[in-house]
Image 1: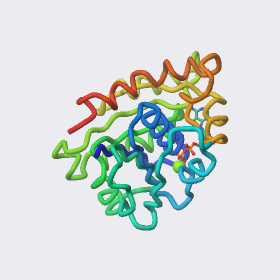
Image 2: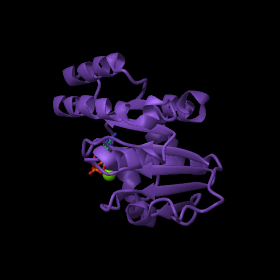
Image 3: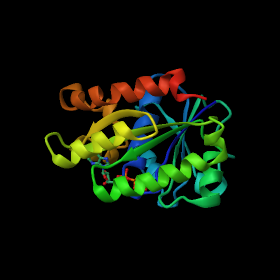
Image 4: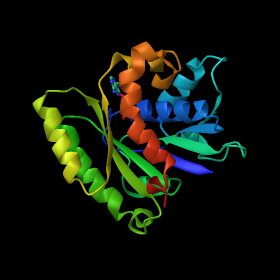
Length: 212
Ligand SMILES: Nc1ncnc2c1ncn2[C@@H]1O[C@H](COP(=O)(O)OP(=O)(O)OP(=O)(O)O)[C@@H](O)[C@H]1O
Ligand SMILES: [Mg+2]
């Protein structure tokens, strides 16, 4: 069973957006996917409740209540949505269930500073030090031709974790969430720029580079 966790202690950077989209992406690839929500805000589980019956099904797991106990044995992939403000023992416990950690970062000075502190803490977690979990950063809500985007791009290029992809800011993410879909399930004429954005992230997640 493959474990992918979307994690950043900074709130609002796109953890639930990425987790739901990763889950939908792999479900459409034919994988048996479980989506584990560690956040009592339940954003991922709310999304799942909106999911239409005619789309590949995804099993929801209320991990904030009792961890991964109710993940179906048949699951090929578990995608976990972590809560904001995960630090200390809570962070160590969360990472215990992850072999791949996707860290979304917004183009904002506050977010970059918070992510620096978070990555320092994450890299001190024993499992990460032992390279039993691989980390990848994803720029999220990017707008071309803005100074702050250039700063984020430079920040992630120099970061001590691999810089995997950048996802543009798009209403498609809001629309998809509302309908219980991933951007890959929106019509191509609407979502092709987002599909292009996702290619490097999807390839990384499917490759050995993202696995210990
Ligand atoms: N690429 C994007 N384009 C447009 N809107 C986005 C994008 N990514 C996220 N959003 C929006 O930003 C807001 C925060 O995203 P999300 O809830 O996924 O973040 P989060 O990290 O899970 O937040 P929290 O820390 O509260 O759990 C949401 O309204 C979401 O729709
Ligand atoms: Mg969330």
